[in-house]
Image (cartoon, rainbow, N blue to C red; front, side):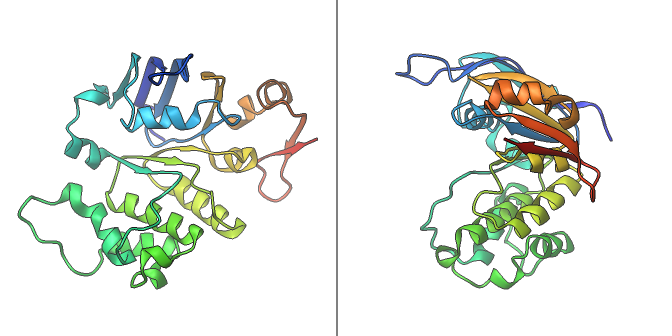
Length: 258
């Protein structure tokens, strides 16, 4: 696996206008090329705010973000869309498109201004449709899909962009356990950099190369799940007791809480 740095934040701070305190305070995050990094922490710890700065929805008050060694703010919108794709936690419920039309929007960053969209799907897109279990949804109206179906479609649309970096905010929300596992397995197998916020520590322990722990607006720990998910750190950050052992079937770290 490539260990070169893909994305990095330095002394990142952000305070929304009209709020009494910083939401993000002196955040130093390093994400290596092709790594799968989970961002975890209690509610209100700054996970979503950090991601919003990483995909340029919010502009930090202090500090810097670099992507491939270049300031994130220096990219044009089109150039950034060729490198980075985003899946939000919540999606508009009233997009008046069928799934097929919505997916094709993911191709836009790679099309010339005057070029026409092609019909059909490339092998790459067909594989995405199959892996995310949406092939049977292509002709359905997006508005009529369940929450879990919408989530899978939005992940597919992001991957149609062919990004080098994929950012997802709680991608397992609305998904049943089978789709949680299949999608996390698929994301972990992609040969791109993935950053996603998660609530489930066991999913992160099983699938992530590294985890970054947010607490009260600060990044307090980053490293492999085995190094970070210790009973002491879990108690300090999440205020629960935990036991860590090895899953008998997968061999990955398993956490039990009490």
